[in-house]
Image 1: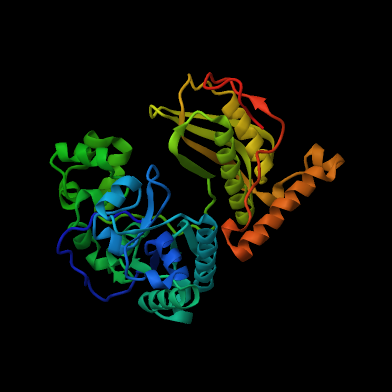
Image 2: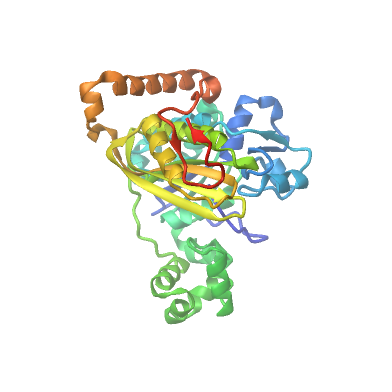
Amino acid sequence: MSRNITPTGLRRDWGTDEDGCSILHVDMDAFFASVELARRPHLQGRPVIVGGQARSVVLAATYEARAFGVHSAMPMARAQRMCPHAIVIPPDHGAYRAASQAVMALLGEVTALIEPVSIDEAFLDVSGARRRLGPPSVIAALIRERVRREIGLPCSVGIAGSKFVAKLASGFAKPDGVLLIPRVATVEFLHALPVGSLWGVGERTREALARWGMTTVAQLAEADVAVVQRAVGRVAGAHLHDLAWGRDPRPVTPERQEKSIGAETTFDVDTADLTEVGRQLLALADRCGGQLRGKGLVARTVSVKIRTADFQTLTRSRTLGVPTDTAREIYLAARELLGATDLGGRAVRLIGVRAEGLSEAASRQLTLEEAVDDGAGARRRVEQAMDEVRHRFGASAVRPGTPIGPAVQTSTTMDASRELS
């Protein structure tokens, strides 16, 4: 999901020379919202927000909603105040994963040099596809047409000689457009941007650079690299100075390995009910397990994130004896972590589960339990069957039941008599 700070009046035409511009950045437009609109075409042209209840955040918004100032990661309550007539749709992560897989499979037919960087964007190196498909601009048009026709979703494409510039270009091409930045125009294009457009420049870095008089990419580029390093640090300063001059030699790297998979939820009302927390923990573990199986991965470590009513965030993790991709194993580990966490009498605002230490599922070994008793294997087959049902009928077609496994008491003083059963 792209983040761009677009200056007013930025040129849309930087030339047509495509020599050396073999890097494409394909970015889906308002991805979650677009998936929902594809399933609800009668909502086209209306302000739509994808997100949970008022205490959650916006996951995506159509451009009609964005016109009112709504953007992703904004609190839902604020978004609904800014655009009270918006239609709010709860997220369907299974549908988004399915759409992402379809898009990535299509891009893989264009070139084997594809580097997915999130669920809705990827870099492509099309240098080897030019003889077969034509110049990059033709390939970009082909991609946009096929994604629209075969999957029903819009996307924008940036074309440049480096990953960094291609990503910027796709952001400025939105919505549903293409922008080519020829190599000879790279520096001129970059120097027309505010410094916040550079990769790695967040609010704090932008403020640090501004204190040294660098608010535009041009000012950063013209500054001595030692000055930039004093402002933001030696390594970051040198990197940003290179980017300001368009120097980004990183190649497109296929099969990027994800580092973790996770899910979290914010309660509508802060809760001290551990049974309810346990139900949400199971649902989150179920989502993690489904994502792991869908990607052919297993996790060695399970971590839990707990945010209390006073906005304190606690994290706990546990390394498993054998990597897993089942919701049951993830849930049991997460429940033990929650049970061992002293919340000091505070209610829970948010709960999250994350699977870490990922590896290919092909390397997974049978546990002793599975080797001597097929019960564990049977449970895994049940979860795989649930995956199939969801793939055919949607993520809400089947849901996990009550929390599984033996009850454990928590060490929290919230309600010592309650158990997660």
